[in-house]
Image 1 (tube, rainbow, N blue to C red):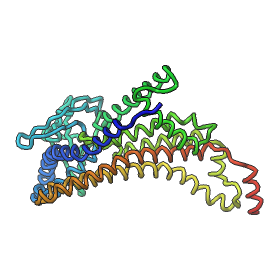
Image 2: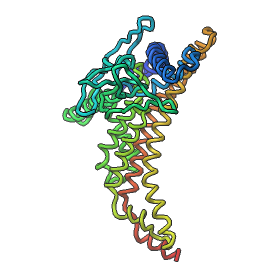
Image 3: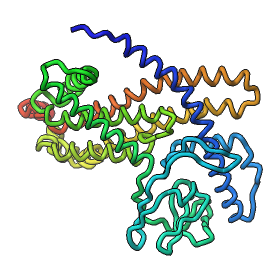
Image 4: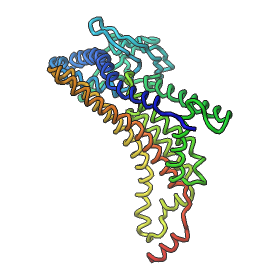
Length: 391
């Protein structure tokens, strides 16, 4: 059966072409919200430090930095656009869940983007730089010598923007794969969107799982590899939308993903794997004692490399795109800066679409490689020959 890919190409081309336009519109909208929040926070800080240079609040570069920082951070609400003159934000709030002498549940609208103090059961809370702190009725926030709030932070289990994004992608993955499974009941060839999923699944099986883990053991780990690949990929693509979601640019998320790979690797490892770590064959005994701690440390550096690779690449891409868009607002020559900024943003956005796939592929490939190293069977006769040769 021959399937025409012309409609898919047209849809993909239209999507890529619209990315910089959507990002530009989102930056203008969200920057107003960030400027309001940043200006309010600067007022609080300047009040606590007995007044500092007020020129920084009006500096366009400072506003751009504040916008980029806000884009990279998580949030307790979705803001689609803001009215700077009326000081109103249009979007929807998310539930705040705190543990502070008991369970405290309320809407983030009470915090009003850090501009108001939320009173819950006699306790007062205030939002500063995206984090919730305990305060008093006046909203007093104390700062240390480094300019960081020193108020007590309650244990925060809130449903933030990143959590909503992960839940959305999880439901989407469930619907995608259950739909693909149902389509196989009708015949050996999938129907509908399953035709798009099947080549990707076969690609992960034949190019990632089988070469790294082996034909005999790969099926046990296919579920995890498929999940982590599509989960990271869809989150990366979601981060390029005007919603301003930067899930994989949050190091806490990448730490959790790398931790899953680490746990699966260690609990799947066979005795040969542990033998090579604690008592490496074919190596003199004094060297075995020296190399054992290094090998143990190596088991920790592998997941660390996973989390830093994903976090750094995604964060860098967002910073570059936001900086290019900011050229329009910082530069005074709009006629010259607008075409350059849009052109560069389009170019980087196309690269970001590729990076979104590559980072999901690399994370999955390295995970399968680490798992394969832990479960592979070693040739003991070969190692015995090597040890004899060394002696």
